[in-house]
Image (cartoon, rainbow over all chains, first blue to last red; front, side, top):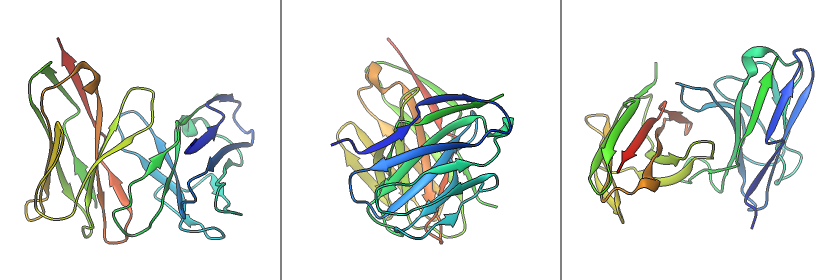
Length: 114
Length: 109
C-alpha cells in the first residue's frame, strides 16, 4: 500500500513560472490537505478538501489553487511562483473530518523558487 | 489569536525519560494531537487526547489538562531513534488543526 504519493520530491523553479505539485492517495480518504512547513514555524494549512468536488481555503491560500476532481487526487498549483513560496510542501489525508481522524502525510515536496 | 507553544529544542540521554510540554490558546477545543517527524521525513501520528488525563502507548504517553490549556508528551527508555521533532497540534472549534512549531529532541549516548 503506497498511502500518499507526492511528486516531485524536489524542484528548483524560476520566479514567475507555473508549478503543479501532485498528490495521490490510495486509502479512499475523504479529506485531503496541503500544508507548507517553514523553519521555525508550525505547519500551515494552504487549502483543504473535505470530499471530492469541494475545496476550501486554509490559513495561507494566497498564490495557490487546488482542485479535487476525484477522491484520490489533490493537486496544488502555484500560478506564478515567488521566492516566498520556497518551502517544503506536505499533502495529507484523513478518513474523517471534524473528528479525531489522524492525518497521513506524503513524503513532502521541497520547492525552491529563485 | 490562536497559539501553540512548545520548546524549540531539548536534549536528553539515551535510556532516560523526557517530557515535552505544549501549551495552547485556541478558539475552542476538539482534541490535541502529537506527531513525530524525523529530519527530512513526513510527520507520523503518535497520540490523540480529547479528555483530561494520561494516555499510555508503549514507551510514549500523552497527558492533557483542558482547564490549563496544557499537554505533555512523555518518552521513556529513550533510544537514539527517538531523535526527531515532536509536533503538538490542537483541533479548534472549526475542526481545523493549529500546529506548534515543533520541539527538536536530541538524544545523546
